[in-house]
Amino acid sequence: MKLRTVTITTLLALFPVLPVLAEEPEQQSAPTTYPEFFEQNAIAVPSPDDLGPLFEAMADRRHVLLGESTHGTHEFYKWRDRISRHLISEEGFRFVAVEGDWQAIYRFNEYVKHRTDEDIDARTIMRNNITRWPQWMWANEDWAEFIEWLREFNADLPEDERAGVYGIDMQDPFDSMDAVLVWFAENDPENLEAVQESYEPFRNNDDGFVTYARQLAQGGPQLDEEIAAPAELLRARIAAGDSDVETWSIKQNALAIKRAEGQYRAMLVQGGGSWNARATYMHEAFQRLAERYGPESRGIGWAHNTHVGDSNYTNMSARGEVNIGHLMRQSQGENGVFILGFSKSTGQVVAGREWGASMSVMDIVAPRPGTFESQIRATEPETPVLYIFDENSRGDAFLNPGMQRAIGVVYNPPNEAWVPSILTRRYDALIHFEETTPLTPVVSGE
Image (cartoon, rainbow, N blue to C red; front, side, top):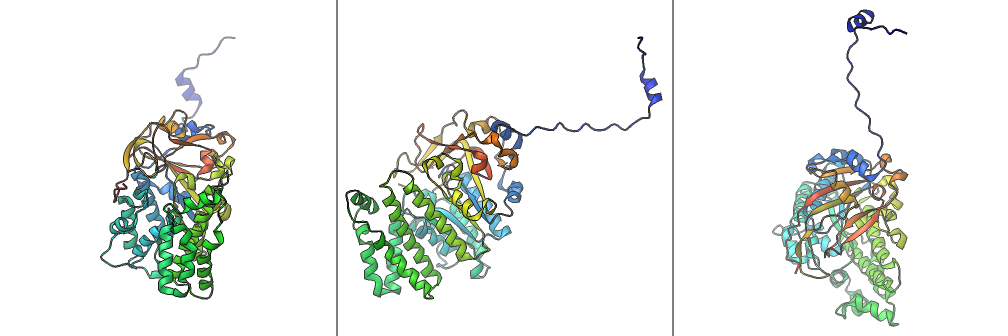
């Protein structure tokens, strides 16, 4: 068959002229691997002022947990500060609960609520009261800036509407003991001797609770009922109507001491008992704060990723360990809490080379090949990037765990920790920094 040659002129004569339509952009298929997800779903956030998508994602959650992948990074503290400012000033959040000891952090709470002398400031509180290693965690310039902002924010509010800051850890029970003893001496001297006797077996030893654990291992007496007695006295007093804020705070100190005994006693048994005693206390303390502030109150948590990132999606679950992120999802429901993790590739960090060592500023080694950090790095992000995890990143394709960096207060590479994680379920969102800078301590940490 002879084909007819059709010219452009002939075509125009046969058909009307139609408008030229713009080509639709090619639709990307849903990612099926973490590298694809990181490539396709990165939201550039040059500064905390660009976090609108994050605030929209967490808008309906009652509580927000903010992580960190090190305990010594300026950017983690600064961005948690700015996120918390927004949640407090714009969303009505009432308290910030941090991975710090109750009594030490409570001194900041008194300051931000204008219950201290006017001639004091946040840095003075740090120099005088943050004495337990590692001091830099809560004696640094970023935390000081947040504390000063919160004090100013509270200045014109009625006292019962002021936002507070609290510690939900119990790693310094002796500071709490001192506070409890002072309170009983001033407010309940009839029971002071009984409280002194409850604490005496622990206070008489140089290493206190460690000695107690050793004595238990050698068949010594278990003193859980004795150390719980002051908390029971305070509970009875509050039940009888003495519910002023000072009595309530001292009861939290007594509970921290009681839970510390349980943590050290659990060290004698193999498994996750000691870790879980601490995690359960942190969750319990957060819940008590929410109860204190009222059934509609909203709270913010600051702690390491290992505490806030849901343990059910890490290798912790295989060891029978839990954390506050997992327990919060259990108690509040997944839609009741928003978990934000933080990660980094390189830069510098404040840490010690071993437990109790002098503070050092250390270079962070590049992430290992195949880790989440290295996969993000391969996308060559030019700014900090935000990833929000939704149904497109929680399918079966993302259930294979990868490794995420976890630097604590001790850092001595190449012996650094990497946590197997199902990242898109461990958190609700992640902010990643390519290069970070160290905290600026207010005290030396030596």
